[in-house]
Image (tube, rainbow, N blue to C red; front, side):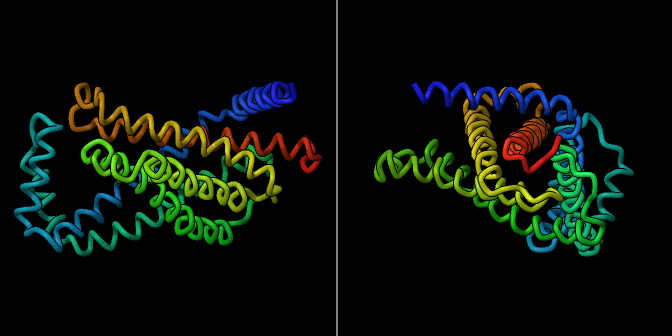
Length: 281
């Protein structure tokens, strides 16, 4: 019967975390993180435009590709807009530099908003300061970015192979396939969130509290990631309603959900710290 008590204890912890998440206006904080990340799409687009235009296409070829995609989303395009795009394409190297610098800046803004939200969750009254905060942001861009790319990369590759080259999974067996599709991405996701909880807040979080909160966050995040991947491949209802903007809609929902789950995991870590007497609240 001990396992029943443990389950009840975990459910009570989750209920208390949800209550504090609501008190801290968690969904509002999640929307702020989502907004900052969406702003990063602008310099990312400029950077991709510069890279593709420099190494693959001429000015007119890039403009042709852009106009083709824009016509799918907009009923009519003003010729002045196309002329402005051609100017941007012609100066794509400068645009690429601006895109790279802007991408780094917006990425630091994402982690800055995340740090602000987690400091609210952990009831931190004094921040790190501008210079130290930006240094931590740059460090986390590199560290968390690597783990995130590895996690998403393994999931995307294995999902694609499973759907379109299923004979490969039949050859390697279900156990190894499960290992590559679920356990390896979970490993990278786990350490990404663990480092976020340990480094970003301006409060020292105990290893065990961060570990338990990270397990919760990683489990829910990986589960939702698999669900979204299955939805896109099997149903694709977003594309029918939103057309070419379907991918953007899925991305926005995904980022918003991820932000909420991350903050909810922070609430769990806060409650665990409070139980240990490390936080007076």
